[in-house]
Image 1 (tube, one colour):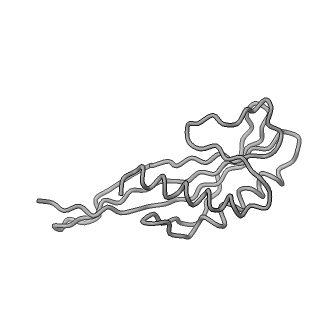
Image 2 (cartoon, rainbow, N blue to C red):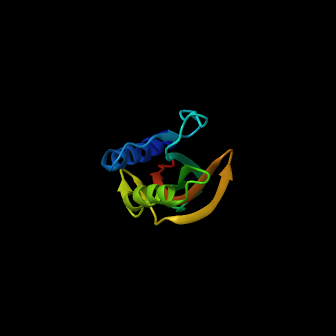
Amino acid sequence: MSLEQARQSLVTAVEAVKLTYPSSVIIEYDNRNIVDTHRQHEAWLEVKVQFVDAYQGDLGPNPFHRHIGVLELSAYTKEGHGTAKGLGLVDYFSSRLHGRQFGAVRTLFTDMRPSSQHKGWYISRVGIPFWFDVVVTIP
């Protein structure tokens, strides 16, 4: 499994959860500017797939190479509109994405990230650690 295949597995999982969300929600993915923050007024979700580490997991003839990352979910709500919508978004998505397996990618349980404010938006964040293994055959 490649890094891009792992990213696609996670994006597909997020999109599947989006289909079950009770109302429409905009999702902006890694390094894409979809949301016009000057015109947007409803809460929206930013999703980042971050690869943070990798290591060799065995010294035998067929070692595995474990890749570790974090699926970061950031819900944006307009400043002054409270935190309920943003927390509701991260709750809904994280509860359906953590502790699961999507293809070869396994997710762990959600960890909390510091909230912040940016250009008139209040951002509620969670991280969902994930990992996947690639078995390597050494000639």
